[in-house]
Image (cartoon, rainbow, N blue to C red; front, side, top):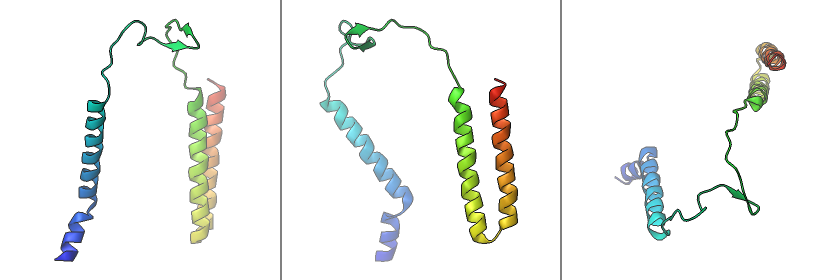
Length: 114
């Protein structure tokens, strides 16, 4: 009976549900304890260093997307190649390394054309 009870108490679904319940309770309690926000004067405006910041529209830039993609490809390739050599699949690791290198070159060439 204790094994069954321990299995239920330590089940991932129950632990996740209890974690959500505790997080919700803390969020609710914090909301009850905090003072209410009153939009007085310039409280809701952007402000820095004693100067008001004029609002302006920002252009969305994806310049770091290529860098993040290269970073991800390099790290995943390194992980796969390292574990493949440890598993004794050296030829497969070399082919994967060539595929990763090709992907990085394609992203770099595409990045220069943007």
